[in-house]
Length: 171
Image (tube, rainbow, N blue to C red):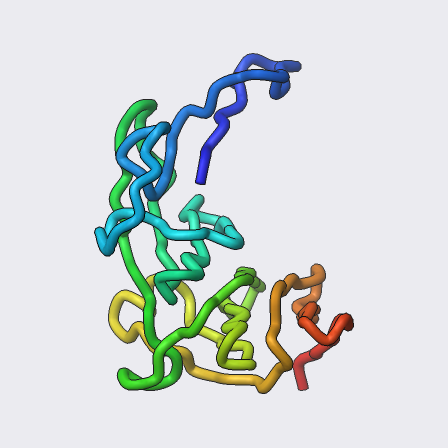
């Protein structure tokens, strides 16, 4: 996962060919090793950022969600702050997560994961609660969910392998 930092000068923008500032999940920009190193990503499929600028990555092949701080300097190798591998119980593992979205409303904050190969959507509590209890607190059956997003009032949209988009709304 590459971070391209925008020039803070007013009116500046991204430019064609500009270099990435940071690489997440690899010790170097040219590292292509595949191994069980917990600090390396293997086939990241989706990313999300929360309001504290934490980066959430669906590390699909390693069956986990990895969380990084984006407050790192250029050229540093950021290490994960948290790695989530479980569903609703310690024996219930993520299996091929491919999508992630974060909803931060005035009264609650939720992290939703498309746990694709387990055919479900998982809801996790906000980041500070995950540090204490890294388990999902809700599960919604879904046919191989691939992506998830929220609108401004908290309605969830989910795309799946059945060529459709599901719409879930709070009760």
